[in-house]
Length: 134
Image 1 (cartoon, rainbow, N blue to C red):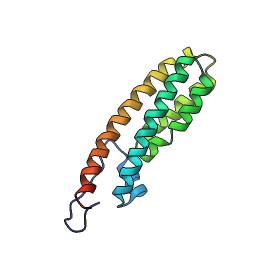
Image 2: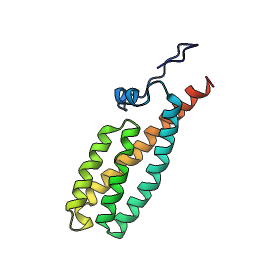
Image 3: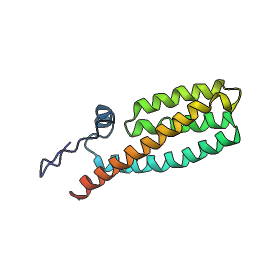
Image 4: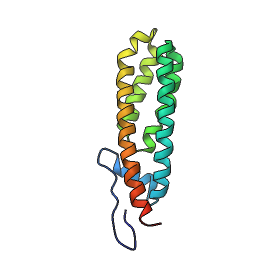
């Protein structure tokens, strides 16, 4: 995507599903910026809730939070992360105790924090690009 006046291209970061994001947002990078910002806010809130459910030993509650978080990664082009959440959701559904989901939870927490970091960097890039052409 590029600015018509200056022909300056914006390319999503390679760790994101670039083709999917181009299909999703087209040339509306201001919308992408808004969605990325909203998604990071939601991820932070839901991750805290997931941690609370985990520490409370509430596997059913954890599964519900994971289910809510899963599609958020699609909006930011992290489709592989979304698939990992789907797999962990299945683990939660079958876990009789939180101990059975513990290893998976720590992995999910780690990849969530990494996803937030990646998304925050992309937001900075989108803001810089979008602010130059208002």
